[in-house]
Figure 1 (spheres, rainbow, N blue to C red):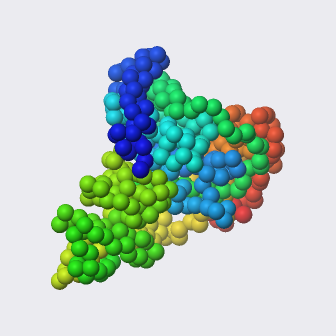
Figure 2 (cartoon, rainbow, N blue to C red):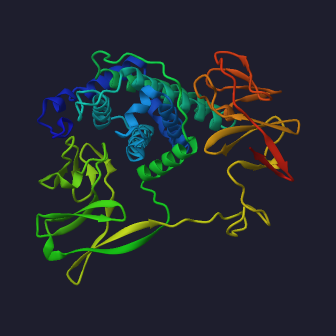
Figure 3 (cartoon, rainbow, N blue to C red):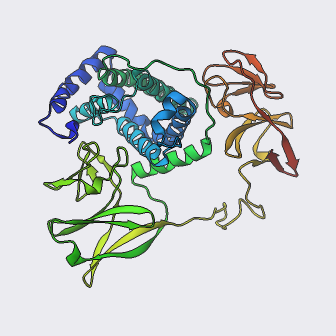
Length: 444
């Protein structure tokens, strides 16, 4: 059983001083109630930007072989299901943090997250090097600062200043909480080449994971599926069923019926096959424990297994399985299927020239790759969107004349030919051709 789930275990006792340590570090960096209030005031801004922040974060992780390896199946392909689980937990962590409530439960939660990255966590085979955890906090801290500056600089500079200072202090506390779980490094760094990543796909996964963390669901229709006769699942028993590629555990527990997806939030283990003790379902892989009636993770009630409505109809156990309904785009007039009056939908590699004024940058997609398009006095140029230094988003950089400056580390490039103008980047950008078709620009 997961030590962090068992309040009598030594690992659980190891986290008992988490609140004391959190308060100690908060006092050390000067994190005060006014800072908590500033973070609460800025929470909606962070919520707005969080899917994009997390999407960019995991895009970077998948580019670098040393971090990509944590998300691979045995055959070397990316484990999309596990990737989305990590996105879900990441979104949940930062949403909870943005809520501005820092009490004993929050401190123990951060302590648990820190240990989960080491061999002292639920899975002794997992070890995420401390430098990667430090990098994660730094990445998120930088992205939060940028989001606050973008949203507040023109409208509320006082809140901008207070919130940035508050988030910087809090991230220092969080980093100390996470880092104290480590003893020493066990892995030597390598310098493998960056790998190609479908950034758009990662962003879509990030948005989907973020919506799940909020409890938001896309528009669904439902299939009503009979899975068993009621007498096939006596009180205290269960049945594992397969429906449209989903493995689902159907439980008859204390005169109630519950259906949970048979995939643990940790690493997709067959949670529905685990021991059921006092209403708590224990995943057989790493001991993560869930309430069978609600699907909630015992250590974090906001993290839940997917559940499905159960009904009994004439002695049959029936489940309602959601089926995503594709919603056609709606224009400003409410008409379906166009982007405006008489206009066809743009492809992902197209843009309206009127939407890209001179001196501005726009992001499009070409064969799954992010591409930045630039308007230089009515002439359009396009390059890869990721900076060749550290993957910074050039579409969010400053364009002065023909020079684009990366917002992360100030590398500069000539957008006409992709050449490096100023370091730290040393590798030129890939360039694309822009073809004009009336009012539509197309990157090829």
